[in-house]
Structure formats: C-alpha cells, structure tokens
Length: 230
Image (cartoon, rainbow, N blue to C red; front, side, top):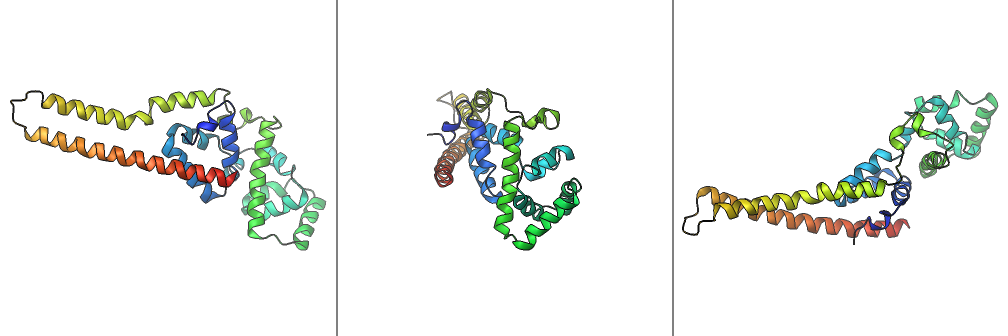
C-alpha cells in the first residue's frame, strides 16, 4: 500500500503539508526523503509549498508583523529569542516601547529553554499557515507559489504516472528489446556487442530489483513515522 494513499484525496496535500511543517529540521528532511523515494512529484510540490521561518522572512515587513502580532506576549518573547538579529530587528521596529518592555519583563521572569524556543518558532509557522488558510493573509500578493490548486492531488498523480515511476521500467524494456534484436538470428554466434548488452541488461535488472526493495523499506519506515506523529 502506498504511504501517500491516504493523502491523495481532495485536501490531502494540505493535510500532509501542514503535518510536515510541524516537524523539526532533521525529522522533516528524513520524512521528505522517504516521500521522494515514493513520488518525486509529491516531494517537489511539498517543498515548493512548504512554509519555513526563512521563507516567511522573505515577505514584506507589514505581512511579517501581522503574523507575530497574532502571538501572545510570552510566545512572542520566546520567538524573538530564537531569531537572527536582522530578523528580530524587523519585528521590534514595529513594537512600541511599552510592548518591548513587556517582552523584556517576560524574559526576565522566565528564561526560555532551547526546546521551548524551537517549539515557539514552529508556532510562528503554524500561525502563518492558519492565517493563509483563513485568508487573513493573501499570498497571491507576495508569494504566489504558496497557492494550492483544488485539484493538486490529481495533477501530482498524473505527473507521477508519467515521469519517475516509469523510468526504470522503460530503461529495462529498451535493454531487453536491444538484446532480443541482437540475438534474433539463432545461427549467429554472439558478438562482443551482444555480450555487453546482455551484461548491461543483467545489471539493470539487478539494480531495478534493489531499488524496488529500497522503496518498499522506505515506505515501511514512512508508515512508522506517521504512526508516531499521529
């Protein structure tokens, strides 16, 4: 069973995308590698549509501050602790002196742990995703690639069926046809070229089998990760 099968229904892409955006960097990349092993088309689309903190900071200042002002003072203070200085400056310039003092007081009362900062930065991404979904942010004005067509799942399936999933089989079929053509005359002794073709075919069949086994193993791991994340 395909690891992506549950997400191929309408709205499934958004569901999977929102899940991956909550993962930490290492877990996210491992997850994406597993998806890519199953479908290069899905993996590429997920990367194109994925929200990250870095991507958010490519947007205009007025959009960024709308996201951060949605956060409670404690969450905002913790998030600012995890930002680069130039990113932090883009936020604080929109805060009044009273607001900045309030954030300083929060940090004085409770110094955030590294894991608290990391989880708060994930909340920034989740907040941005929610605001996009609820049309509080209009991404078509500043990041059109984030738009998700209603029929995206169907489009990705069409791409997958006509691209990466058929390359190995097509190459093997070509090699089989070449060997068959070269050995069509039963009375003709095998030539060096025919022998090379036969060796190439054997190697391709072996590699194709190994790739299928590797994909099967990655699918099993992806299922395990999804159960852990659920």
